[in-house]
Length: 207
Image 1 (cartoon, rainbow, N blue to C red):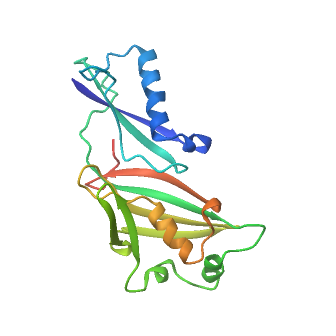
Image 2 (tube, rainbow, N blue to C red; image 1 turned 135 degrees about the vertical axis):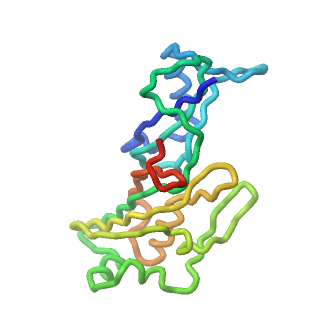
């Protein structure tokens, strides 16, 4: 069998399609394509399909990917086959002002506050939910890069966070946006999150 990686975007209203519904969409699409995909064995066989670091509902992405196994030994060479080696993912978080009123964090940055000042306290703790319970993390230790700009009424943060599968640490951007809201950023309904890049452990584009 050969593993095929498929890249796609999930933007706009499609960001509100749940992972379960997205799996159903891909299963139907693959069945209609007549590709020689691999089906699991057992009483209820289904197409082997795995999504790479799925995002939370409502978060957009320009670089989503999933993997499907095929029983065909030779595939179009333009398709890439790799084992997952995820290391980091990059996000852009947009905080929109409401009714022309700038949020407290925007007002502070207008006055010269640097983005790194937000993480100056000794403890910037966030709570990550896992299958084994809740885990407290020091957020600033995992922020590889964070930048910001203010364009019109929009505060834009760009951040690089670790991601991976299995035992690897995978941080959702909601941990960052939740912290920024405690610092005076716009509420959740005025925040837009877009994943823009996936990188492997070597820091290169995930292909």
